[in-house]
Image (cartoon, rainbow over all chains, first blue to last red; front, side):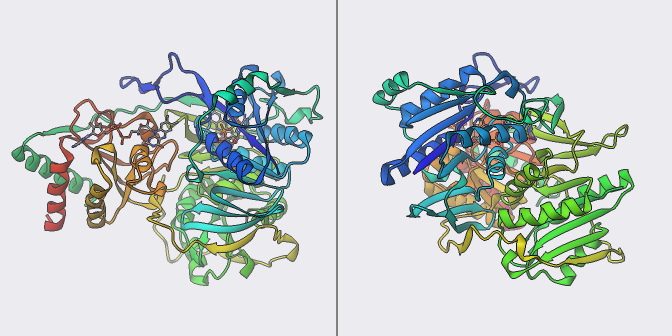
Length: 265
Length: 329
Ligand SMILES: Cc1cc2nc3c(=O)[nH]c(=O)nc-3n(C[C@H](O)[C@H](O)[C@H](O)COP(=O)(O)OP(=O)(O)OC[C@H]3O[C@@H](n4cnc5c(N)ncnc54)[C@H](O)[C@@H]3O)c2cc1C
Ligand SMILES: Cc1cc2nc3c(=O)[nH]c(=O)nc-3n(C[C@H](O)[C@H](O)[C@H](O)COP(=O)(O)OP(=O)(O)OC[C@H]3O[C@@H](n4cnc5c(N)ncnc54)[C@H](O)[C@@H]3O)c2cc1C
């Protein structure tokens, strides 16, 4: 089985603090990492490789430094990494991003399964995975929480939706996006890290892909960001202390009053 | 002038509440552009009364595509239908819900009809000078609000966060047209086969639909203590949420996780107990109407963004709160 995992590099957020005055993110020293939700996509692909045999290729679109996330993917056990990079790709919205990625994936040939993350933690649209499927006219199953291999050509998957879990029979080739429930991501190994150092990362650009130039980057993007604001996070609410029995009773009294006044109880 | 469309959603022949919320949004846009509002519904077995409810809630027209094979969501088939209807009627704007199906179908359709799509909007407006749709959405874990336009492509498409607005008051006297669009065999894709719902879904709960959420974090100490939250949520007719730390410890299932790698919720009331308020957790609760925090650390970040903060031991505060709710006063 040939599996492609599109992964995105995003600003690392675990150490990010909020400035309570301005409500903005304190950005100093923020590094780029693999989109945390893409680690689950990588894990899903690597467990299929372990159980059924597969070649797993991680693909990322971004500036040259995005290759770092490919090294991470290889050190977890991916066989290859492909960097899709060109100045002309810059500023792409999800429509243009999914176009470019779909062309890159087509150029790699012969794909059986594409496993994308549920969404990226920065742009947070969850649109790139479905977009790639649409460009490639592949069947699409999103929010997958479990994968069973029925045959070389078919998967049974479970899809997490509002009503519970749907079960679907999905013919390959197909694209799925996975949720965190699928498996816990493995850690990179020392051997993997060595392999990452030795693996040559292929780069795809406008030079070796045949692309419609009007579909690329900022210019080719139908959506335009016109304004960015930082919402205030501080609500300036009531603070009450409840450190002993008497103050617990009083605090809960005041909470009940507050909830009644706001008409929620 | 082309219409504003909303995409209604159904499950087992019943319209979902979010279908009506979209009409609140759509009505406002249609009025400011002086055009009509239509609701598109793909599904099976929805009653004529239910369709009329869409009219009573603000739609001028309802397009209903019905077939037993449309009973469960299929991205490929639904998108074939939408693409053809979009080409035929050329709507100005299409709004869908940012739900598991809306967030799957809309990007698929946007690619096929070559237009932009803005995700998970919380505000929608019309730009006076151009008539363009101004779409505002939280991104980067809710830390910024971006306003996005699709100036040169039609239709303009957006998904809208569930519960970010109220459904309209229905008006029994409102008139409108219900149009049954005959199903065409050629729309059927049939590659993906729906096998059914998993019977044993564990402690699954759809917290995105909750009006009241009572959430617990690592401060709850153990799985057993989540029963306290369950009792409270039963009394409040709400649902139970959790932080990643609580889910990772196996105290409660993943469907309850709120935050950057879990659900984004917008209840009327969110109560967080034993939750520090990490930026990743806050990302999922910022659009809640009222936030209450219970934590014995006065410096906990959740206290800072709460409307009502109790600095105290949750093991004293929660039982007291339970007593009050059961006492009925
Ligand atoms: C504030 C802000 C708001 C935005 N809002 C919108 C919007 O509403 N509509 C819109 O069209 N664009 C929007 N964009 C642009 C969008 O963020 C970019 O196109 C981005 O490159 C991809 O979208 P995403 O981050 O939402 O990824 P998602 O669609 O959430 O990512 C889902 C999955 O797709 C794959 N993937 C995504 N990006 C890449 C990549 N570069 N390389 C490899 N795999 C990838 C990963 O598997 C990932 O898990 C916005 C950008 C900003 C800064
Ligand atoms: C990429 C990434 C994604 C993430 N996604 C998510 C996500 O989706 N959702 C999420 O929640 N987290 C997420 N996290 C984890 C997040 O960073 C925090 O670790 C987590 O939210 C902390 O959970 P907590 O508040 O339960 O635990 P803690 O931060 O440990 O807080 C426990 C709190 O309980 C209080 N407490 C203890 N005992 C009592 C008592 N007796 N009475 C009252 N209060 C008490 C303590 O004062 C403390 O404030 C993510 C992290 C990363 C890096």
